[in-house]
Amino acid sequence: MKKKWFGASLLVLVLALAGCSEEKAKPEKEPKTEQSEEKKASDDMAEQQAKIIKNMQEKAVQLDPATLEADPKAYEEKIIKAVGTVNADVKKGMGGSFELKVGETNFKVMNFTMGEVAPGSDIIVYGNVKTGKDAKSGLPLINATYIE
Image (cartoon, rainbow, N blue to C red):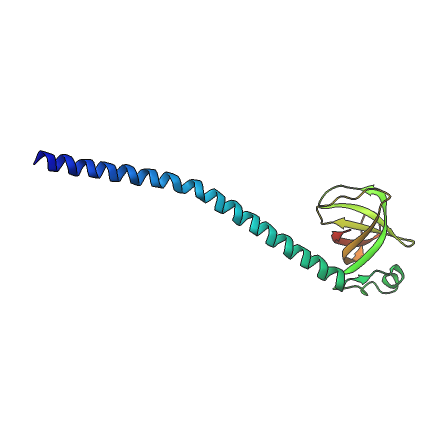
């Protein structure tokens, strides 16, 4: 009888230890899955951003300062493309601003991108024209959502 109890106790102990060691192996596999899922999500996001940028570039209307001066609502609810040169007034980072000279007209650009621009560089700004003018400078406003 003692042998049966000893055998049963030994069997329970072996099963318990086998169960514990199996659970320790599982967490090692999960980080690999999480890493691959994060990479896949990152790749998907990059693809979506590329599609959005391409769509914006295709639908953008070339900004003409003379047209905007004649009709301040000419570019309302449109994506614009403004090609110009950055003036020295550069506040860095997202939410920063700078002046952009398009033709003979200066614009105040609100930078809603993660990119930075350097004074004197030629850039292309995609975004929208805001109705009204900047309170401090009196310049027309552009909200930049993408900068090349």
